[in-house]
Length: 158
Image 1: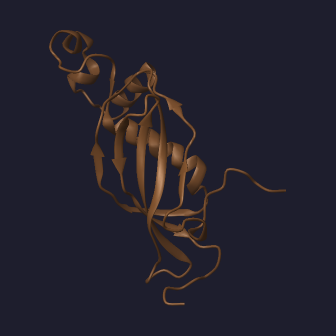
Image 2 (image 1 turned 180 degrees about the vertical axis):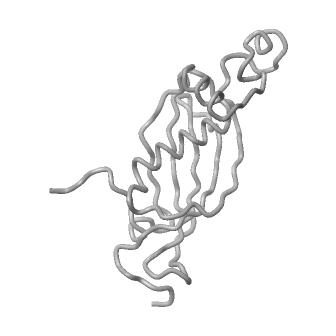
Image 3 (image 1 turned 45 degrees about the vertical axis):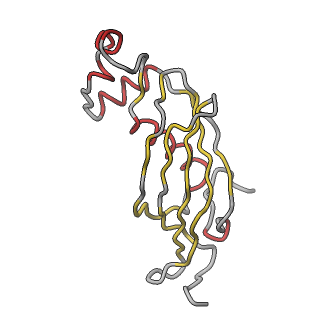
């Protein structure tokens, strides 16, 4: 019997492949829990009187780090179970705010895919991930490079 929810292998991730994740709505409770867990005491996230009276941004703002973490969670459940070995690096740009009540999903494009020179049976895959709200606005874009399991013991140069 097939087990569903397992990750994608290196061979499943050629340059140019695109896919998107399921969506997740950001709740007020998510923002409170996230800020408490990481001790993010920035008044933009913890003082609604400041937000209402002094901030240029109005509403229950979600930290960019929360949007990023939710994106990684959405991707992990769909693409990396038992096949993702390492998160190596990334660039991240925050483009628009996300608020409590916004629903986000991730759209991915594979922009680099090559076998590892040092680890047989492993590939290096970079994607361009766009976190997108229900209104089509991009919240953030990031480009992680990950080490991913191959189905077979492929080696670079073969």
